[in-house]
Image (cartoon, one colour):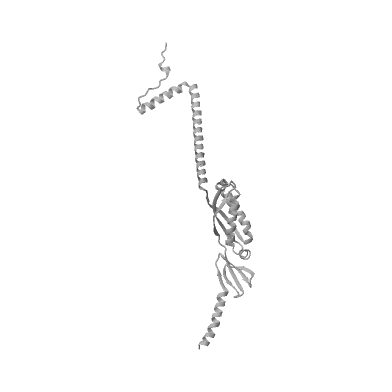
Length: 246
């Protein structure tokens, strides 16, 4: 009885195992690279995939965008300043077969290439460019990475510098430079204000010299302001009013 049951269950187990080995389901963002006896035959998906058990092997590849964090890299800039720069790389697989057949581990390879490219690009420019021209540096790194990863079936969609860590001495020097720049701007603004005020006073003096009545009106306005303030002061009076007619 046990032998009969075993002889009945064994084929069922084998069939179930073969069925399980033959059926694969891929999500919308996944593709399957099919190898038959070690040879590439097709890229399939998404949906239901049927394989030949034992003969076929499927390697799943995600087509979603990957955000790869590039850790801090020690960099010496073109003007011999030591800094630490980190970045984030955005890329995705556009050709699943290449990402499997052309490179052993495209995630690791892209990470290493990103680090070396970051050091190379940032080391070829000065510190001021890294701080003020980030968009240009991001584009340069993206272009280099995109060209070199194209043979792996990878598309680099974006690069962003995250942090630029400066030495303490350099931070102090930049703080002093910024303070000096603010003082310079303040002095320039003050000088421009004095220059404009002098121009207005010159124009006012010319108008008064052409119209003596304007000076009298100014005296009267000053008297009214002083009376409103309630201050006991000497009131300026035009000399013409004190002059006696002979």
